[in-house]
Amino acid sequence: MSKYDATAYERPSVAVDLLIFTIEDERLKCLMIRRKEEPFADMLALPGVFVGIEETLEEAAQRGIREEAGLENIYFEQLYTFGGVRRDPRMRVISVSYMALVDRGMLAFKAGERTTQACLVDVEELLHAEGEEQIPVAFDHKDIIGYARWRLQNKVEYTSIAFHLVPEEFTLPELQKVYEILLGKNLYKANFRKKISDRIEETGKMTEGDAHRPSKLYRLKKSEDE
Amino acid sequence: MSKYDATAYERPSVAVDLLIFTIEDERLKCLMIRRKEEPFADMLALPGVFVGIEETLEEAAQRGIREEAGLENIYFEQLYTFGGVRRDPRMRVISVSYMALVDRGMLAFKAGERTTQACLVDVEELLHAEGEEQIPVAFDHKDIIGYARWRLQNKVEYTSIAFHLVPEEFTLPELQKVYEILLGKNLYKANFRKKISDRIEETGKMTEGDAHRPSKLYRLKKSEDE
DNA sequence: CGAATAGTGTCTATAAGACAGTATATC
DNA sequence: GATATACTGTCTTATAGACACTATTCG
Image 1 (cartoon, each protein chain N blue to C red):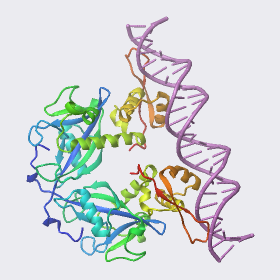
Image 2: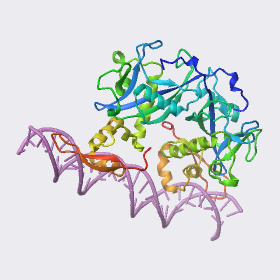
Image 3: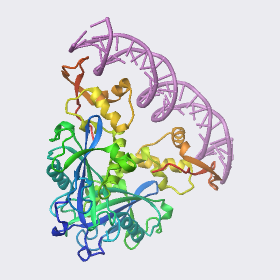
Image 4: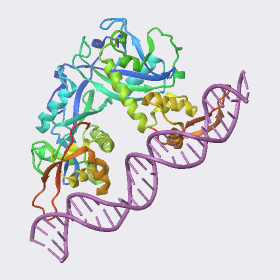
């Protein structure tokens, strides 16, 4: 670091790309934007912002989440930094990706609706569709989503990250469904409950109005988390 | 991304900082450089290079490892990207950190010796020394090392990352010692062997010349790893 | 043979997995 | 009572942890 004068070098642009995940209709979805301009016009892309010279990476991510999704104070974490030379055909852009998780109820727009630009894209479809059905994705954003999907699956197993995808008060069947979606497999009720029992506490409330036995509402216990 | 013209913005510099870890004298050590210039003159710092405009992050990391440690083809992985606004008092520098692991035998310089600039610093000492004994570290590099230390401890538990810290052919007592150093606790021989038995294979060779029972030499089995 | 380190067998405790049963709403 | 979903008990299996024992080299 000491032997180079950075001012003499041509500098790349630094951007923050955002992966805002949620669960909708029992599917994992990612917030994406339909591009209006070249390159990749009319294709789907991750929302992102350039990092201001007086702004930390976290601040840039937070700003992006606010500007692109209208969200404040949601959970997010740095994912990975992508630095391929020709990721963006216009110029060199290094992209620090941040992954955010949010309960569907926090998102402003309604199911199916596409706001001016933003829409929720089914992650498995996007990643695994073949041939005709393949969804065109701009830049290297499909790779980024694939990496995030992988990390999410891993982190579900050893952290409480899944709790960010349900409301503050949730039922166990609801939470279990989120785990099943992220893990891609079904779980046994009894075992699931044993596993998470020490991370939750009862609210005293119950669900109402369903044509079957009501469910207890829980919340995440204080301490730990990630 | 589409609504901004990045060329209009002032751009940060992008550097790669390198954490090159090894085991020496049964201690985890990190390769560091004594700075000769301000800021932080005479303090220890992580080696690093600026990312060239036609160079991927991985290429920059690889180049740094070659230039600063004389190493080729060693294991490394991206760690985290640090983007605080005043990390470097001279200018805005965003640093993508890479963590490399190498067997002590691969490093050119001898124990205790300090090459022109490079030396091996005891990680626990650097992180936990208090008051008088505290080791002055430049920039936010102590935080970076602390983060790497934490990640290393986690990854030891669920990956084969520790194998990069021993020679290609190693004994189980030797490998166990590395695990103990990274985990910060002692392990039972029998249990350790059970746990890793399916990741290793015998070479057929044994250690020689010690005043006690010789030890079998193993190598990492193909497949998996991380 | 003693010192030193390498290597193994086995019991116990804890967690993961599977499945069957009971409970409580609405209609 | 039928249906639908919530919830619980318990057996089995796999894995982690603790400890005692045997093995092989040198001097």
